[in-house]
Amino acid sequence: NAGVTQTPKFQVLKTGQSMTLQCAQDMNHEYMSWYRQDPGMGLRLIHYSVGAGITDQGEVPNGYNVSRSTTEDFPLRLLSAAPSQTSVYFCASMDSSYEQYFGPGTRLTVT
Amino acid sequence: GENVEQHPSTLSVQEGDSAVIKCTYSDSASNYFPWYKQELGKRPQLIIDIRSNVGEKKDQRIAVTLNKTAKHFSLHITETQPEDSAVYFCAASILTGGGNKLTFGTGTQLKVEL
Image (cartoon, rainbow over the protein chains, first blue to last red):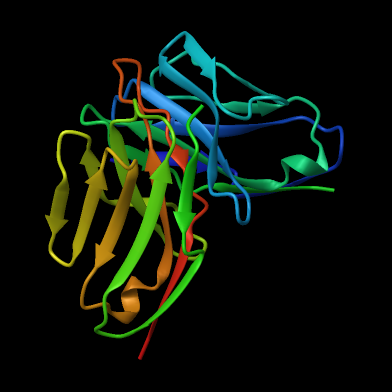
């Protein structure tokens, strides 16, 4: 199993640009989520999904969209990038015992 | 919503000593409390977790205690080793059939000195 994979590993955007962060898992987990990690603030939940076709907002959803068309994939879209979205983004999936497995992360810089 | 506070933000111990990290949570409905270790530039990895029906859980040199009345839980690492140096995060959530929305603490940078 590859586990949870994320692409790209690094990305630099200009203010106003849009992009999609990719996340995939091969463990057949129904629950997936996106977190952002900023210095001194821990990880904060952006959006989550309890299964294909079902998504919901987390603590900091503004400026981000998600969709879940398959069990395996859970992309995160930045609609119009802002410097405040400079962060490290982690995708995670959860097994039946509620343990969450994090992907390797995407480091995003918005200039 | 849930609020998790974590202390201390930095902790330095000598190799072989014990380390204790403490967290408090605000939502009395929270019933799941995991601890994650994150090495520099890496992803968070679960090291131990506890559910609200248990007061203490151990796994070799690591233990977690939970006080539901006071709404706090702690991570204890005994016989610390240099490879324990990392950032540790506590988290809390309410487990439901719909998933596991974690609220994280702000992290503790643990440094184990030789």
